[in-house]
Image (cartoon, rainbow, N blue to C red; front, side, top):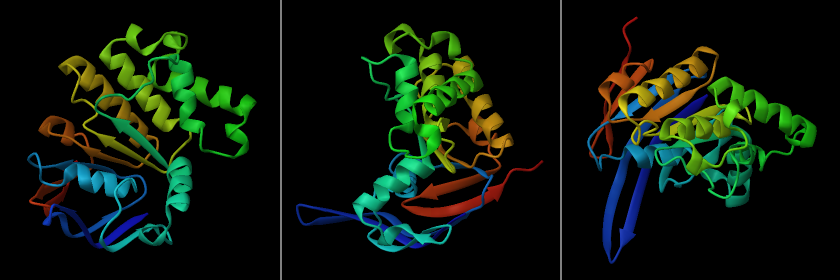
Length: 229
């Protein structure tokens, strides 16, 4: 589904050039659950942001199916993100002024298919809330929920549009052990149902729940191994 070839990401500021990604070669098949690990500053989040087309590579090729995303303009990439990707963040990124139901519905904001119209929208939002066990909090606001409940709502927002790829950046980083395990069980369950997931994590035990672990160091992939079954 995904193929990156010699992906580079360089930043230039005040005449200083920093290379965050060095010649990354990476393939991800549909239905995989991939965990990315490594020390702070090694390029994990930059790689995830590049997969999510938030960061644009400064070199190399990024193929999603038969589309070269590195060659798309910003308008094309925005449409691609809205219809194809789901994002889960460490800090939840829910909007305080909206109810949980309204926050989740934002996951359909950039979709233009029939399922994103009003009738289909309500059904999709309800199904997403049921899947993560948050339906009973639909009319609550984010500040009325625990951290674990907020992250479950964020996952529902990510999956409501039935994305082809879910990108999770430290999804358990702000949670206690019990809530972190609950979130990981939800992600593993989504993967068992066919979702493709790429997750950045600092937790070895959570990385062990993925089907493949990628280790990064200094902007390079230094190891890639499938989980022993």
